[in-house]
Length: 226
Ligand SMILES: C[S@@+](CC[C@H](N)C(=O)[O-])C[C@H]1O[C@@H](n2cnc3c(N)ncnc32)[C@H](O)[C@@H]1O
Image (cartoon, rainbow, N blue to C red; front, side, top):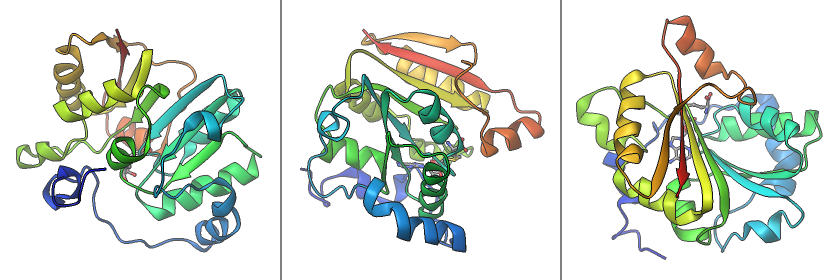
């Protein structure tokens, strides 16, 4: 375990998410009260995917699930896969819990914490078949680029946690972020991949819809651990 003093994850200046208020709707709060105990995991102990999803054929982690639209839809369409949904903001956690209840999903577990911290401190190596990173905060300004989640140390972390042959799927509506990610994953010989057509299984999220409304171009990238 890394200590708070040593870990860069605790450095306020390079957090990959915005510190927003925790204004939560009544429905999100109610869903959290009712369903957190069943589907939530506190990252205060080792998290062993094969123990949590003993019968799942694959294990996928989605980082930054937002309101959870894509997570719930993909989990519904892949019932044999176990999904870890990582999101730092509680309204999104409540929203995904409500969807899980509504469509009676059993193959999703939520973790309300920085995904990098959970990967580093709680998850065993080579435990994931895939990582989904859909519309990461783009951090447009140069002075904020260090806050982009895709960095060299993130590439290392993903490499460590993927099984051999596992992959990361990134979607972004910010061309500069797609190029940035290509620079980080594409230049690393431990990964093979690049731009792919949008896969049918990836549904439109609210965030993506907003970007498309502004005329943004969406890029899907896939990098396989060689
Ligand atoms: C731009 S939103 C996109 C949300 C969703 N994927 C979508 O497409 O609608 C990015 C999300 O990632 C979350 N996030 C950013 N960094 C994170 C991290 N290190 N761990 C977990 N969640 C993170 C943010 O809180 C935010 O909800």
